[in-house]
Length: 307
Image (tube, rainbow, N blue to C red):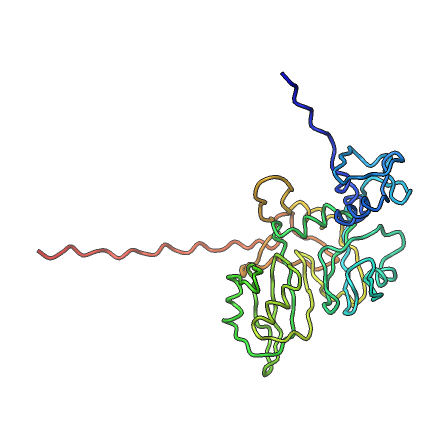
């Protein structure tokens, strides 16, 4: 009778390197294909390698240190910057602006999600690949809120239809909570909250409704707000806020993911915290407002049939 091989202990090298802030998992796979990653001096040829830690691992012949504590930064991305390390067309990237915005000694940071060239606002940056992935996964349900300046004819009732989701050119977009913020003639500001964050989702949905988007600003991601952070500036979010938020995310593993436990306001949007945050309530109680239980609806008594 053959023996069942013992399970390999450790984690895939792409996951370990991503957690250590080297690059995203996809980028690490490209680096492996280019022969840039070695283990004990031997060039790695597969991203499926499982290791207990990063001892003996080098990237471009430089030793890799174990993962540091997860850190999260808020960056007010201006228009005209690419959310990438480099651009083949030579356009400026967020990292050119971050060099002046971040303090000396900041570890390598990766963007949580992306903002396209013409979109501005809150872009979260982290050194932890695991946290980045958990925040980006649609199953995590982390809400993102945007303000869009639009031109065209639209009604609040039509915006409310977005809560049912919609399909555009074969792509299914999930629930979006949309509200008319203010309107002047055919110009209006629309606030939208969604949790999937597909490529150019906000622009495509609004254009499908017949609106022209002239400005798009991300104002929040999860419980973290853009607030009054100056354009082009970056600030580190307090570690206890990062730990609390990370603990609310569903754990990776088989089966359906649980919804995050971040508190919600009565409209279904996440309860916001501005930063720098100074929590004044115990964990798990911020923003939780009990809803009154509606009284039971009295039943109408049926009359006895006449003889």
